[in-house]
Amino acid sequence: MASASSIIAWSFTGSRSIANVEQQPRLTFRAARRIAGLLLLFLLIAPLHVLTKLLFGRSGWPRRFLAAATRAIGVRVTVRGRPARQHTLLVANHLSWLDIVILGCATNCTFVSKDELGHGLLHWLADQNQTVYVKRSHRKGAKEQAITVAKSLEGEKPVTVFAEGTTGPGTHLLPFRSTLLEAANFAAKDVEVRPLALDYGAATVDVAWHEESGASNAMRQLSRRGVLPVSVHLLDPLDRSLDRKQLAAAARAAVAQKLGFKSDVQSPIDVAE
Image 1 (cartoon, rainbow, N blue to C red):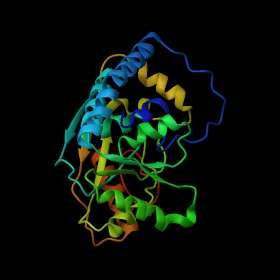
Image 2 (cartoon, rainbow, N blue to C red):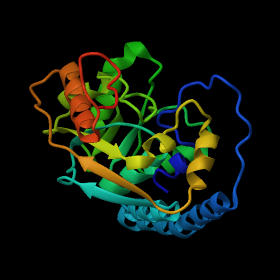
Image 3 (cartoon, one colour):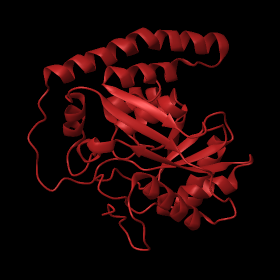
Image 4 (cartoon, rainbow, N blue to C red):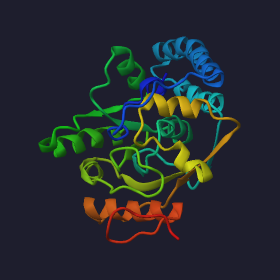
């Protein structure tokens, strides 16, 4: 289903390179049970989604799948703030592959992804959520990337950008990249730019995918006991008269304030004391 690729092989951004070779992640009984639940959900919902698209040209099953998936993996989401309307560019912090499942469910957004997803099935899965593909390794194509995102902003779904460009450690925010925020100026529609703060509370550092393999992080999260509460804070729109670098700085400061980080002119934004 939509964004199911993020569950199988999260493809939007990734953790930094790992300094030391890790042991192979161990598949626990709890993780196996949750993976089985996700696969069962997919097998039940995918045919309904495909049939609905064939009959009506659109489908609401992807969001339903993500809502069920969050519960299946033990996540409970609380959304705070005015819901994101269409033609909205959401600028979010990024901690884990869980972010994609949570935000797809909470805001019905689509995401910006690198264009190399590997297996064709992963592309199909991401396509169901109208994923926006950009060549992020092509530095000279910054304008082209922004225009690609701008076209998606003219559609019905909000578009989420993980402005840090990778998953952070949870103790501070990484610098926010401004390239894709230029999309708001290229879009034909009246686009809102809104910061979004993902807050995992006391579990933030444990959830963070940082300096470990994706498989290890996935097994850790899927093996968690109990319920993982997550708050999605949809913050006030930014002043559209700002240029892209000012927008990035303003979004970063707003997210930092909501998460309780202190912000100054230097990076990173460290945990407030």
